Image (cartoon, rainbow, N blue to C red; front, side, top):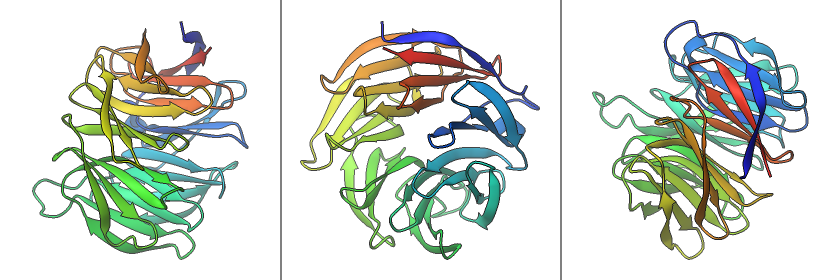
Length: 307
């Protein structure tokens, strides 16, 4: 066994149909932030004691959540109002809210340049609306827009290549955008599985891990360009996290409701852990090797220790 259940954190009940979306951990303040989309809130958890603290309200359709440890910032993508919000961490004070593209979702941040990538899902009835908005956080302004070849999913930033990487659902691609010239795409990787969805990065071994709707976990080596199948998934996935301290990849699969755990060194499945049907999103505390699975039916988080 790898993941051992420690207990559960009770979270606010849903105000309407729906559940949770992306989540992130801020280590300095021991905070876990999760998008409670059905409530238009971000729920704040003390990750030292694993207890719910409060909710940040008024974030319509909040989906994406990202933390910058370096800058002490929390970013949210408010899909229901086509905005992003930026908060200072700790007291969670909103410092700005900006209009972006249609239905913002995925987020990635370059802390050295203060550049935030916002992946806008778009509207299929509106041409060229699947896009990226590039935000200069210091200027508090959108400085550019990139039209994408298809609907985007999640995104990551890699310091080694000074580039953003972004999953495209259809055609199944990972696109690369140079942070130095963020107005255009630099590279495209063809993903050999349907619907690239969750995305995370192993910066040391230089692998991108893409969890695909076609029930495959795919690895892309950023230096060689090699693309390989890591393994089969238990169903269509959503969020994927890489844990560098253990070299593990965790993939949330909402149906049937499991976490597929992979060994990133050997590129093989270690175990599959049951969560709850519909539990499609995770967070990982790499310092404590804890994994949080967000359970929509019972509006709580399951807390696991990886051993």
